[in-house]
Image (tube, rainbow, N blue to C red):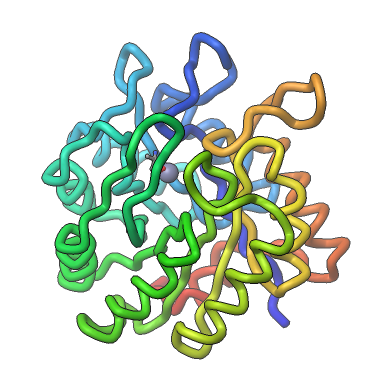
Length: 277
Ligand code: KMH
Ligand code: ZN
């Protein structure tokens, strides 16, 4: 069994900077947290950007600047979010690929998202998948519900394998409106991946809020990988706010080491995902 690939999702689109001052929102804060997370064991960074008011943005210039700055300062695999915020239009989400990231997210279906709806129409998913193949961007398919595994099987069957021919998915569990964040749900997802997706498909998992730890331990137990970060949780423990993203990455690396599957390097992560160096 391989070591553990750790993805950090440092910012997201939902957490309010006014309530969580350590949330990285400026380019300087993003690069600083990225470097610390790489030292703590992360190999992929899942990036959402904020504007000068700390509101979510898909501004193309900021996206290009962020990709360049992260590449200059770290060896992390740069994965841009095409999910954005629930309010972002499809065209802006597709245009994220213009920033030429190594990877981009691709959510496999529509899901209730708290009181909102995270819309991912089938035709939009197909368009995103095909543009990623054209632009040599490696996707991470985001699965918020078990039906998203079947959608991905359909996508790959009808529209072919992604760039690099390797399939990597991420279970995003515990979203109010999506699949639950607990060990039995991770088991169900892991079994569905083995049953419906191509042999060799790799998966990571993240649990939102207090589901972080059960999802982390269950993913490790199933030979899966981990995603952590302040996009998904801002509480380290009861009454203990997260001090920084690297604290979450360090804990994930510690859990991975205990599971005898230590965190892998960015070079090893590129090999695992069949990416170019
Ligand atoms: N912010 C959520 C609406 C992704 O990055 O691709 C969507 C999300 C998924 O975070
Ligand atoms: Zn995201």
